[in-house]
Amino acid sequence: MKKLLVAATLAATLVGCATAGKLSSDERLQLYRSHAGAPVNSFKYFGSLNGWTELGDSALAVWTKPSEAWLLSLSGPCMDLSYAPAISVTNMMGQVSARFDRVIVLGGGPVGHVPCRIETIQPLDVKALKASEKELREAKIAERAADQAGGE
Image (cartoon, rainbow, N blue to C red; front, side, top):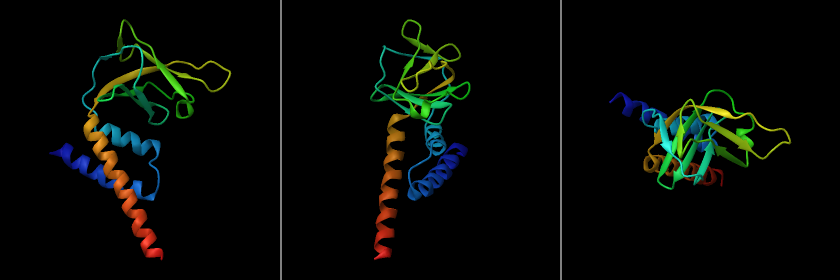
């Protein structure tokens, strides 16, 4: 029950933020955390990601399949993650493990980047996350339409 109340409060907060403009990295991180399961030790990785989303400088979501995603919390700030054109994830024999593997920012400046250690891994409820993102977009569109109608 407490989790449901927290999720409802978060959703109301995020709807307010979404109507004012694009969500910040912190707001997106809150949204993703509200759809994350309990931490796990590792996940299977087949050498390429289906996608990824930065969530500030110390967290990101990675998709291993269109319907499978993971929230990775990093042990500290990861330089240039917010501006990275690409990333790679280390693994051992097809397993990415918390506290052992790292995210490496690719591209950008001429200096090599320090690998960022993965502190925790949490599975994401992709269906619920997509539904929440859709609700936020629809609320944003409705707010814009109301603002335009009021300004005419």
